[in-house]
Image 1 (cartoon, rainbow, N blue to C red):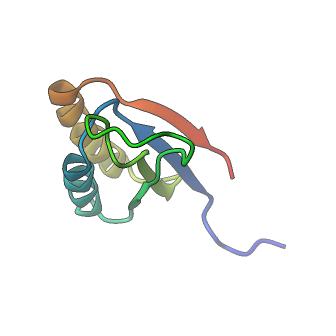
Image 2 (image 1 turned 180 degrees about the horizontal axis):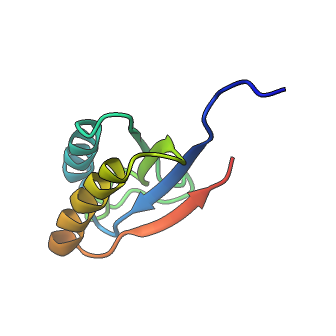
Length: 96
């Protein structure tokens, strides 16, 4: 039976050494796109605290698999902007 719910893609991305404040800024920009859910996830708990490392594991993004091209374009532009400043994003597709 079809429920009519659109299948969602969920990504987890991180950028080595990116400060918490910048992750929050990226999340705020992505939320402005609309039809995109975004949040922060914690780093592995076994890691010892290091002030020079980020206090967050990364961002998770979720949006419809059939999202409009304009939405995907805006997401990519935002992520590219921050990548050019802070370095490459590491991306993991979460199939859950």
